[in-house]
Length: 294
Image 1 (cartoon, helix red, strand yellow):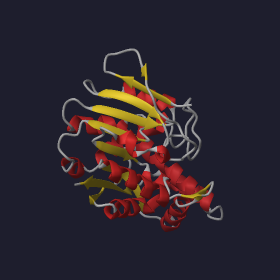
Image 2: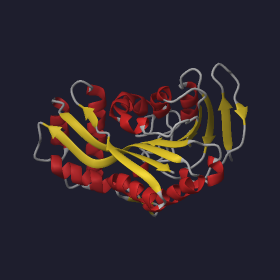
Image 3: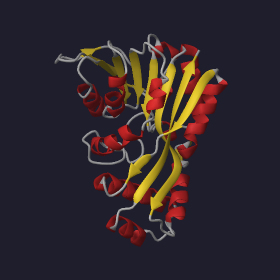
């Protein structure tokens, strides 16, 4: 079954169009790790989690790369759009007449993304996987974007995406790809082991697919450079701590939970209890990647 919808600010009806929905691909939507249900029962890709992290995402993304975008960006395709937080952040920095194509696998998140964009921005939604994207899909597109997606892809999938974008000549802005570098203050003797276990977990194999995890920014930069793009990479670290207690606590639970899954031999219950009892200041490494074909 394929689905696509279009909506214009102020219009109530959704106009059915064309589109494709492929097979399972973690990262192209919210049904990857944790298999979060459309009803938002929680999990890594739930609307609740995506909303919780939205302010930290907005504060972390590189404005320098936005200022380097090609002139005249009007049509933007957002891959794995979730609730549309990237669109809400980026669209005010672009010009008039914008149209966003929100791409995800979860229809509920697509509805949220379309409804949450600023006035004056038109939106269409499409259920499909990143692996299904073709140059023909990018006809008339000025920019491809994604947020916190690349680490869930494989090296082969990123290289294929680079080839599709190169053939179409479309610029890309990939934001908030994890680097695996986490710094906590005050530190704890177990921090290094938790970080290493988490990073190994991010590089795990799922149904024959080896996820890139923290290697994603470097792999993406190299893939686009190989295809002739001018690539710029900038840091976009999260800054967490006592000032954002709910997000910091939820991130800690997820970080430690992934480490425990990878290394069940680690005794992490007391570690997590200590960290939650006195929230540390945290820097969570991410990078943003801009690639422009000239």
